[in-house]
Amino acid sequence: MGEDFPYENTSGPMLRGDFLYVKWRVKNRMKPSEYIGQFEDKVDLRTRLPADITNFGIHFVVKDAQLYVYLIPPPGVWPAGALRSTAPATMSAYLKQHQIYPDQPK
Image (cartoon, rainbow, N blue to C red; front, side, top):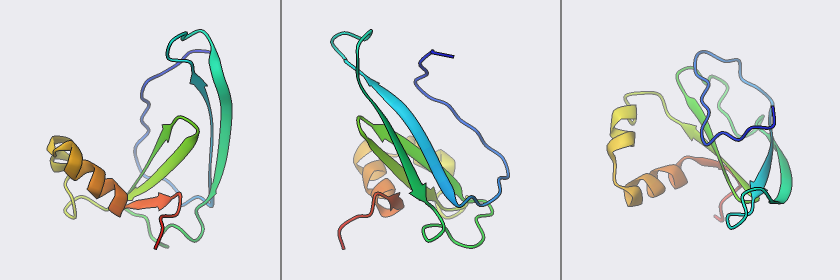
């Protein structure tokens, strides 16, 4: 529709997909009407997700030209309320622990 949105959410039971395809544009922060670039990424999820993703969350974030994908464990492993109320440093460590794309150095 040509409109920007700062945040979007879809939830509910979903089938386990093979790929995640994301396309986005990055705006010039100094001149919001100008775009720096348009990017896209296709992530192969076949080897990155468990066979059963029941109650898992898949969360993705775009930061400039990089896409990040996280597999969030079911409630009880890390309750959603605790995730929202945690300190930024703890949140960063938590997300890094559950990052499935891009691959992290071993």
